[in-house]
Image (cartoon, rainbow, N blue to C red):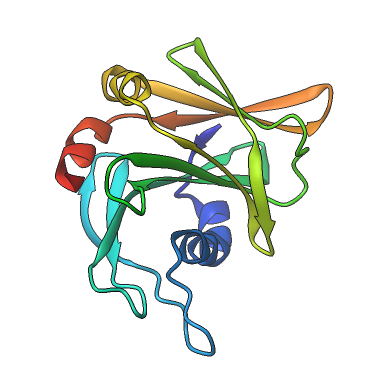
Length: 176
């Protein structure tokens, strides 16, 4: 497994950006999709910002793209953003179509099992799992070195996709 960035990841980047735009609500009817401007990079994370159509304020999200090295079509977009009421944060993960929905999305941080999140909807670009990040999960992300998201393509086959947490703490603080 590797962090997205090689030739296979470049091939899938338009789909990932489309998924990001849709999930963040940046899609504008009958116009080109706004993909969000990279404001700053924090090691392995990017801060992307956009003012959606009709919104009064800019929305920013901490984003990382990851892919399974041995399965080029198994990519994830991991997004951390403020909730609509600005009182908390959401962790959203966009997985490719074809993942087994009932099994949900598993998460381990530094080999500690955090739990599973259910998929809340599927779009043409992928399936979305999300959870509200409570203080405990935020502390774990900030202190951790590596997260592993587990997606299931069959009931017996869970595939772990590593996600670097390097730069998460600094990037998260920039969103406050």
